[in-house]
Image 1 (cartoon, rainbow, N blue to C red):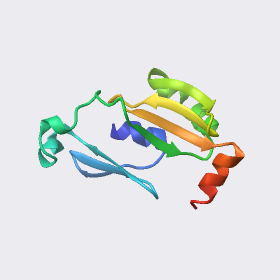
Image 2: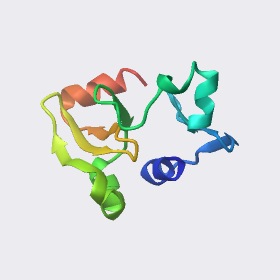
Image 3: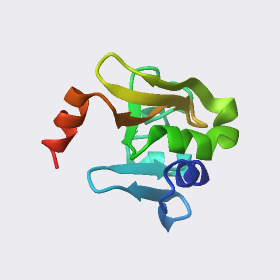
Length: 121
């Protein structure tokens, strides 16, 4: 998972122990832990790979088409949807990570979507 997210984001993942790492962005942190960390979170049943079907991990990127070209070969077995303009104005690339989590790389492309993110900066 660490290598997967380093490849996808182009950002380093900080490894604190052999069992725990974090991908830190300016607005969020993605924690990646081995099954050995589950004992600290309430036991083995707290998290199970390949069980998520309700959450999406999203990363806003500068140019989703550029990221798609950069990652197309790497992501081939994981792709759910090639870059597509969504009704709310983002262009999104959807794929699953090795644990089955849905991941969205997106770029706001329509005026209202762009405006929404400009107001947050």
